[in-house]
Length: 358
Image 1: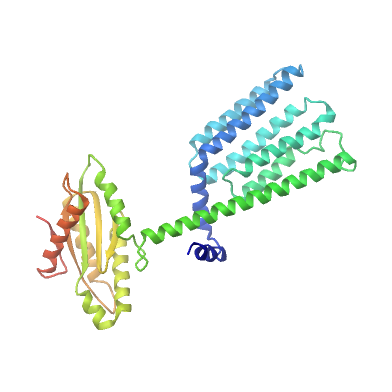
Image 2 (image 1 turned 90 degrees about the vertical axis):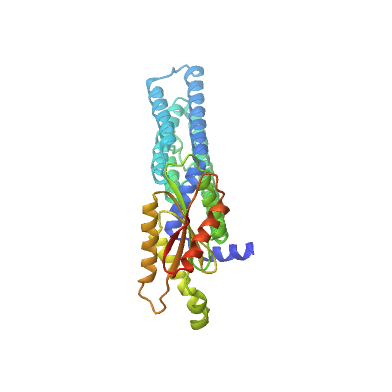
């Protein structure tokens, strides 16, 4: 089953909205790791700078202090960034600054050592960037920016036409290709894993017919709401049943019955968008209304009845609703049982109405 889903997934193009959702999820999950990479990069740069400054007897300059301050500010900013799209630009700026800082330090080395250390610095930066939650365009820009700043043929007296230059060029090309391939494959694997997890989660917690949450999802969410203590306002449970639904199936067929279920689900989603709702099974739905007053609950329930009743359709139906206040100490099953008894009263006193549990 898993291989079948994976094969279907690989055949489909990923919508841009889903890519954006994955990028945000990936950034939120890896923000701490990004901060670790930044701190490690700054630490290595600082250590190398100190070695060159003191063992090379050049001194720790004001330029070094300025770079260290700016890099530290970037690390601090990362801790406050919430959006993945902002991180893409922050990272490019970080790459530019630390790349310039590396170049500044390497300028303190003997001329014949500079090309090798520039390539080593570029490889370290590209490896670090390849494991960050970057978009493709951002990583490609990082590669271009890294080699533009740390070009081993600029200010090094090394020509690309000599043996040393050819070796450096080939290594740089190999390193770039390997890094690009690793980044693309890693990002593709993470994206597919995310989509697979999301699809399996949807299948576990969404009703396949109506595309609203199912009983498992409702019981989980309602249980979380119920556990919140203390409550600022009252909580209510609503049980909903489509009136005379069996007659709809018998008279028009189950296909029409499915259409009715989907239409009622859309009405519930529209009216109760701010609350937890689900299809429990058959023609039965439930809603958990939290932080509301009794009058507001009554108005919402009446509005839902009116919306279903007045819908322009070839197969009109009505619904009955039972409501119960969730008392302190009630379990979820106890609250559902009270709402179900109120629904029973609605069904047996005329239908198409709302009844509160006494």
